[in-house]
Image (cartoon, rainbow, N blue to C red):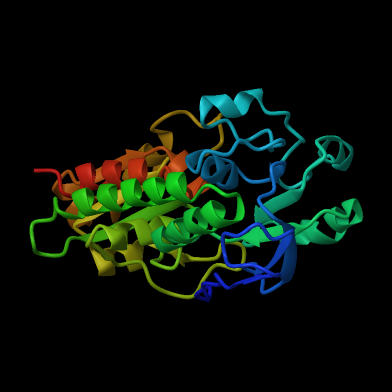
Length: 297
């Protein structure tokens, strides 16, 4: 389901960037949340939110252990895993605001509400969502100039990547999973949206998998029917998976060898961190990498 962009800010007693003591915003779960004016101590519980804060010139006071970019984030106290944060550590960071993902962390809200700190749920499932996040962070955390620059830089990166296109839309299919259980990244996912933002045609369709929003279960027969020009394989996040072994497993299926992209040598592997796990400002890096593969001469 397409997320409705909510960027309505009701200021209590002043214009948008004034010196009010508080402002009420609507987060991406439709919740009304009252924030202190220009809060300084922000806890971010998802890597893309940590990256978003740094992009607008604000360092968080707490982060999940999986948030390791930029390098400066490693100096920020970590509060456990994204899905099981340690509430005592989080409280010890004395946050003014807690940020979490509306798409994957909403279940944490009841527990976090015990800390009596404003909780804001932010979603990122497209390039447009990243633009929105940067704008909102610029307003909420009093960093409009840096936020505008970060958004402008991302828009420039997207435009440069898109300009590499040849005019004829390239049919692209992005795979995540194994030959026994794999999925196509639809345009409603962040991964699939990157393909669409490039001006390429994302051919993955079908109902979402129950576990993975924006990803459709596929078979080799369905993939052969789509017969994309380019196939992008996202490497597994499991560190125990040997590099290249998943792609080698795909190659063992006879139907794989019949795919036009395979016969043309247009199958590429990419790391999962930016295109899948951290849908934030590093989308500029992800989209540049994808353009280099999809529009490879």
